[in-house]
Image (cartoon, rainbow, N blue to C red; front, top):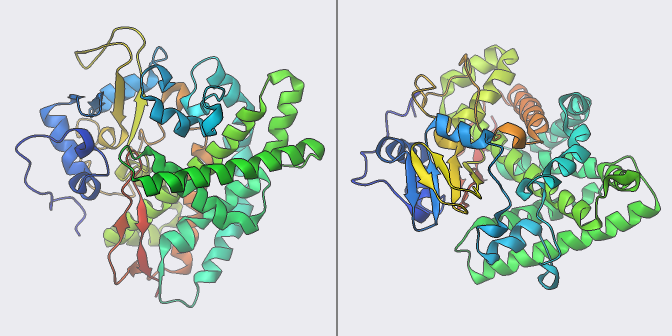
Length: 417
C-alpha cells in the first residue's frame, strides 16, 4: 500500500444510504473514506430515510453541530424504545427508572455527572498515570516476547486500556478478561440488526457487568478505597445527589467506552504505521514525533466514526431544514478527511503540521477520556516500536469489526521479528 489512497475504487452511480452508511456494509467498512468522499461531493447533508436521520460529511457542518449547545443527545424523545435499554444498561423490569449514561444525558444532568469525574480525567491527573501505564505496557510486551506472530488486538491493544480502567475503578485485575468480554458484547447493541443470539449475549454481559458493579459499589460503601468508585460515592455524600444507578451507569460507561475506543485507536494507529513503511521509519528515527503521530492516527482513521444530536425545535444545518426530533449524525471520519480543511487528506503523515481532528467530538461534550486515550496510545505505541522495531503485517489478513459508529479491528496479526 502506498502513502496515499490512489487505490480508491471507481465511484458508485449513487451514494450509499441507510445501512450502507454503517460498518455493516462491506464497502463502508473496508473502504470507508471513498464512500464518505462520494457522499460529501454528491449529498453532504444527506437525508437518510432508511435510518431516519441526516448524515453530515462536511467538516464545517460537523463542527458546527457538535458545538451547538441548543442540540440534545438524550434520544428518548427521538429514538425507538429498543435503544433505551442500551444507553441506560437498565434491567428489563426497571427501564423507566433508569437515566441514560453521561454521554446520552442532557443538561443539567450532563454537566453534573461530568463534573464528578472530570478530576480523574483532566490532563494533570492523567499525567500522574504515565509511569503506571508504561509498566502495564511493558508487562504485555514481555508476554509477546519470543513469539513470531501475534494477534495484536488480543495481545496488546485490547488488554492495555482494560487494565488501566480496571485499576482506576479499583476492581481486580484477574477479572480483566471478563471486563473485556462484557464491554465488547455490550457495544454490539449499537448494531440495529443484531441477531437474537447476539442480543442474548448482550443481555447476559449487561447483567453480569451490572451485578459485578452493584456488588462492588455496595462493598465500597462499607469500606472506601483510593479509586474512582469510592470518589463517586464520596461525591454523593457531599451533596452532589449522585444516585446508585448513576454510579453504576458511570462505571459501565467508563469500562465500555474506555476499552473499546482506546483499543481501536491503538489498533488503527499501528495498522496505519505498518501500511505506510516510510512513516513508520520516520517515527522510529525520531521517537519524539509520537504525540504528533497519535494525533494523525486519530485524524486518519478515527476509532469513532460518527456522533449524534437531536434538535427539539425547528433547525437548519448546511442549508437543510431539520424537523424537531430528527437524528443528526455527524460523520467524524468524513470531517477528518475533508479536503477543504486538510491538504491531501488521505495521506498518512506523522509529520503533518495541522493534525487537529474531530475524533473526540467537540464543544462541551468533547470526550472526557481523551487525555487518557491519547496517553495510552502514545506510551503503548512508542514502547511497542522500541521493543519490536522490525514488526510487519502478519501472514494472515486483519479483520475489521462489523459495528456501526465504531471503527476498529476484531483481529490484527503482526509479525514481531
